[in-house]
Image (cartoon, rainbow, N blue to C red; front, side):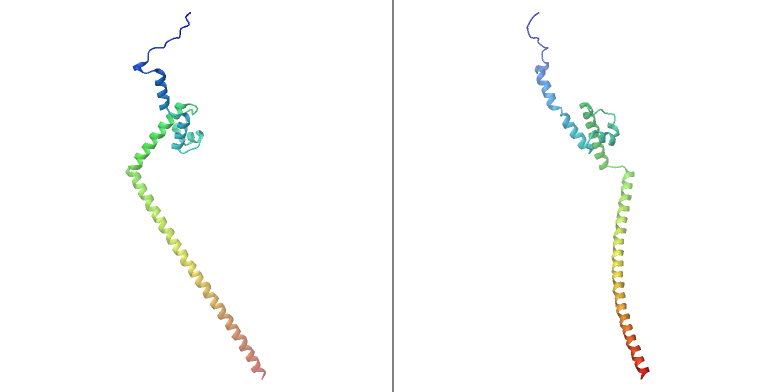
Length: 159
């Protein structure tokens, strides 16, 4: 047996195989980066929540880096589709959104009207309370006058 080192096949296109692998590794995001991107796009904190909120991802095994790549692609495509739809929704949704806006405006106007009526009722209640206080003092004055007049009648009837 020979003790010579084995040579591998010649590098393709003049590049060394190790250099190609290094370049590929630098392009691939790490598992942690993929996780961060996927969880950030999905606006969730863990894989259980991710699978629960995204049915398209429930079959993936998130122990594998390939699953994280697939999830990232699915979420990026969904985000692009949502942005496209959001900028140009169908007529049905435009009509629905217009109706929602009208209902919200009517509701806001109704609430504002309710606040104004409530303020008017509070002012009316304050006015009634003040009027009741005036009537109470007037009634007390009339009672005092009546008592004085009774005393005077008694004094006159005794004379």
